[in-house]
Length: 490
Image (cartoon, rainbow, N blue to C red; front, top):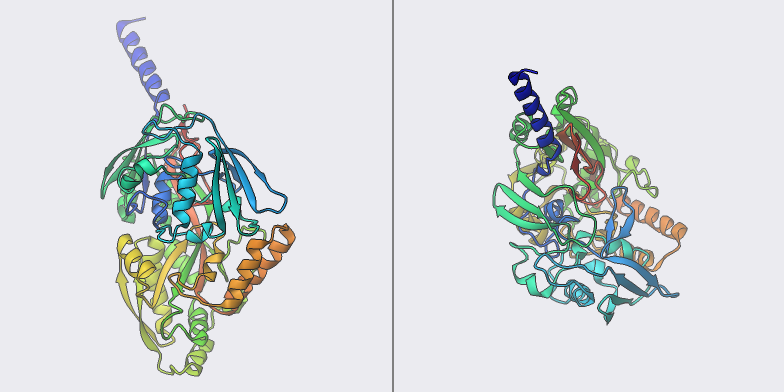
């Protein structure tokens, strides 16, 4: 063999070996977290980076939506369903090297249910009456009454286990128990994670992962085509999918989400405190036009706040079918024969910005004028979610099985219906699957008939990735970019 041939062979072998050893990842998301504490904010973008990667809970969601053991390797439930005894994995440490034990579980749950709790899903913990440490690896959680969804609730990102020693800096320097430790955050650009070498479970294949934040769909397309990034989870420009599908460098994954995308109405303020007005808005909306125009056909129409892939889903689309003439009549009956003007405040995702323009045009047809304001995510959380300063807004609720938010009068859309609240209390106290299914069906119909919000579509989840990348979640049972099983294929 000539020297040239030997050199060429060596280069090829070296290149192959280098590729086979690749263990880093650059993955893009559209939304950057406002901070890094999943236990004190409603922003799903926090979980998109940190869930299962940096932080873990007692239980966790698998990609199929099932509940799996997390930091608790097992649990016992009392006969009356009010006491859960969690047995924790031994040898678990936080990323600062300190031991994770039952005292940390108690601290986490007590903090989440405290009177001054900032947890966005504080209701998940409201049924807890006491948390007792039995020994370092055993903790007992006592409920005031049985809760058929308790293990499900403990899998939420809002229920991840945190330590009192690191809580003061959690928003900028999070310390969890997951397979990746927080490394760097260049705000406005990227967050870096690194493999935690003392992780208690199976070690991830990746040694480093960088999350880049690219909000503009055109910039997302350019970065992916140039292969400046290895993947884009929740790719924001569905019009480009066919081009990526035809390019052998890439793979396209399209999954489902728990994201009910709604035109939220402020039920606590005029004129949306009037059910007739809300019904008029519901009938003014052409869902398919929004799906086609804003999402290029990606999305499943919904008629209530429930995921169509759930076995308990009820098709209630007929209760708010597109009917502009009926919408005008309802507005006249409500005392608005000439319509009215309201605000439409839109967060950054393309489904909101693109969908907002289409919905504004549809509402204009029945006499409702909208003043559109585009908000950054932190502004939306402050003005709309916390401040309740809006008439209309568009947002996708990506939390799993979250119909119970309609039982919270202080929630941002301010729906206050004692009958619905009673129904949710019954659901919480019910453990029989058939009985729970019937209650969930009643709940779906109640909010659909009350036209609490304009129910638009179930958000699809397209991901573009390098053709050699394996292990990314296709579906989104919760808002997460779980990297624990991601690896590069030769």
